[in-house]
Structure formats: C-alpha cells, structure tokens
Length: 464
Image (cartoon, rainbow, N blue to C red):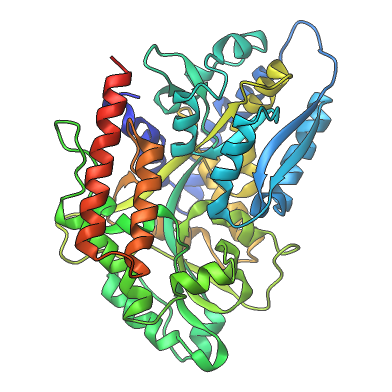
C-alpha cells in the first residue's frame, strides 16, 4: 500500500471532527441536523438491498473475538440483518486473550478456513490484502446489489495499488479516558477535567490506586500501540521521508519508557506479568477494579451492554491527556476493516452483509460511522444513544467535549504503511523484551529500527 494512502484511513476521523462541531445540545442545531438526515445512511442501506432477483438464503460466518462474541448490541445488529436479508449469520469465535486473536486467525486462514467475513483492525486488514487472503476486488459484488462503495466511503476504502477494493471500514474510532465515578468518590478525588496532561493522569491514578482493595488507578491494555503513544500523538507515522523506519526518533524511545513506567515506577496499573497471568482484556475496567482506562471509542459498545457487563457504579468520559512537552498533541483515531475470506463459499452474500453492516452497525453499537457521506444527524444520533444507554451518566455535552472540543488534531493510532503487520509484531515483541527485562531500552529500540528497515527493504523489493 502506497505511503500517500496511509492517512486515508483517518480522513473519516477528520470529517467526523468537523461534524462534531455541530453536535451541541441546543434546539437550533438539532433542527439543522434533521434537515440533513434525508441523504444519510438510510438511503444507502436501502440501495444495498436492491437486486433484480432475491438469492437463496445462506448461512454466513464471521470471525469474532471473545469480547465481540459477548457483545449483545453486535448480535442484535446481525439479527436484524438476518430479518432483512433472510440469511443467517453465525459467529466463529476465536477463543483466548485479544492479543492472541490475530495469530490464531492467521493460522486458521492459512489452513484453508472458509469463514466468510474477516473483521479486524486496519493493520491486519492491510496485511490480509497484501497476502491475497481476502477477495481482492469487491466492486463487482457490490455492483450486483446496487451498493456504491466509492460514493459511500470515498478515500477510506481499502484499495490495492491498482485501485481495487479489498476491504471496507465500518466504524471510525477515537481515544479518550473512561473513569469509574465510584472509585473517585470513595477516594475523595475530583473527577478529571480537560484540558489535562499525562502528568495529571498519573498523579490522579496514584490517588486512586489502593492495593488493599485490589484497585488500580489506571489500566491501558497491552496493545502494540501502547508502546508508541507519545510518538503517535506527535503525529509521527513511523517512517522517514526516504521510506525507512523512523524508530530512531527520540519520541519512540520516550513513548516506550512512558508506558513501562506506569506500572514499574508509578505502580498505577497492572504489570505486563499480571496482565498475562490473569489474561486481562479491555473488559477488566468493567470489573469495577480500575479507576481510569485510556481506550478508543469502540468501547462504548461494551459500556452500553449492561446485560453482559452489569455494574453498580457510574461511568464518565474525559478527553485524552496531552504531553506538555509536545508542540501539538493529536488525538488517536483509526477505522476498522471488513473483508471477504478468499476461501469463502458465499462471496456474493458476504458482500451483501458487508454493505449492510458498514452502513448500519454503528447505530447498534454506539460507534462513529466511517462513511464519507456521513450526516451531522448520524453523529448526533450516536451521542444521544450513548447518553440514553448509560442512563445519562455520559451526556451529549460530555461526548462533545471529549471527542471534539479538546483542542487536539487527529493522528493514526497505529503505524500503517507498507509493513503495517510486521511493524506491529516487531514493536510488540521488542516492547515486551524491554518491559520484562530481557533487553535494555536502547537495545529494544535499536532492534525495532533494524528489523523494521529490513522488512521495508524486503517489501520494496517484492513490489518491484
């Protein structure tokens, strides 16, 4: 995938920010929103169902992780698709910690697994496209059902170097800090308010941490991008102008040290070892044993699912903290990926499913849509739905302040580009080598740089 297309995956995020500017709670803005709603998702989703003849119903299978398998809102979306299409949709759940899901999915696919739909993050989706593990040209399938993917998603579509569509985004996600109001109240600590810095976050988390009660002030799941938060917020892409790795930039070293010290020095969150032993996932925050968690907005689906994750405490959300030594802080954002397994036996039905899900799932899961033609009313509806599903614990104004009125730009949460998947694996492996003491910080950073450059060189040669 060409470097000039990397930022295409957060164009929808930038568009979303411009729309959020109109997402206040006054009546005049609501009236404007309703006036625009006639050309939104509803018409697009109806077009996706238009066909000359109704095909025979089939059973579609979708890869999901354990968290998604328990997501009642996601299941409700799929159930409604079943009613509309006549097709059945079944989960193919990949068991185990979230961190193990990509490898297990890869093994299944390389073994000839015929699960129809692959839903994953942008990095994994790009990798599947490069490896020819997903259908490489979705346009003919979409044309048969009257779905105009180009019009609906524009530059946020996943395309190969020849412009063929191999994947479609469903949601655009943004990062913020969720917090447990009960833990704050019991510790007599004021709720966090933006603007605030990461130093403020750490000091707040220290006040909340109570080992005697098993409570941590912070939890930031061990995703690969945790190792380069600061660099991402500074807007670094992971590549230099000449295409080589930028991992010798000091901000990447500072980022890795920052994440490590949250547990090793500040003692405010579970260590790497504890996360591994207890097989912690993002749902750990919903156990009520964590004061704050920094995570992206896809988490609203879990927060809104009180049946699967009941709680007796209220939740809040606040904008991402900033690094005070950066000239400009950018919030993190990205789109997800939906593609059709190259081994699928139901590719036309799978394309129909993707067309519907990509323009409708966000409504069920309280997510931000990734569509290029998204309307102001679509975003307002999401905000109102979140407020309702949290029983007013998180208000429309809270969301507006956390995701728009935060004085921040937008940057990709992940290092993408020509070696997205390899880069991710290298960073995670070497990051863990550092935090477990197997390597020094300088060694880990140097090895990431060297291995990334080697992978870039190989990718360049293979594309000639």
